[in-house]
Length: 235
Image 1 (tube, rainbow, N blue to C red):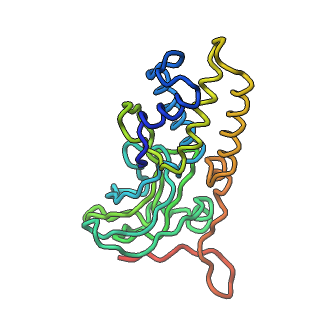
Image 2 (spheres, one colour; image 1 turned 180 degrees about the vertical axis):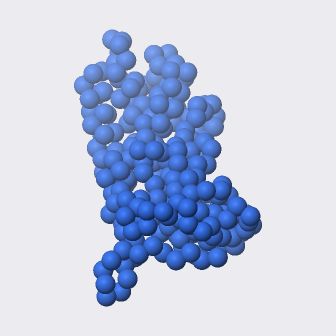
């Protein structure tokens, strides 16, 4: 989470618009730009609202991402039966690879250690783990997920890091100059939109990239044979 508040951003943009008293653009209107801009940035750059969470796994292979999040970014490691005991790293694989090497993997023996996970960004709310958790024991993993931006009050800190503030300001200026009013400037709107979109394109991982990279990671191969094998179950 950043330290910039809606008030900081609105005041900055108001000065750039020469409307410090918020006569032409009300503070309520500008707050809409803040919230819409944060959502726009997070929808294209999900890492902008990334957070790390320790989550208890449910019984079975299929899991649900933490409440309040909209996209899974990574599953890092096992965290034992208390959520405080770092354990084995967890590798991401493509489900098709596991399906081909072991079609019955979802019914394999349960384990207290997760070795791999599978995630398809087209089904954003769920992911799969292997081996399935042992429902007789608590089982925690550490993961990184993108938090969904909710409506914020003007005095609240934005959910995204301050490094994205210049991008958000360009978004707000684009929206302000796109207003149907004689004091708005369509040419400036186009300029600020270009600045905003160029910054979006120049930054990190996008949802499209996450989707396109599905299947690039494969299961470890047996040394010297080159055939895919299912990671061993570790109890």
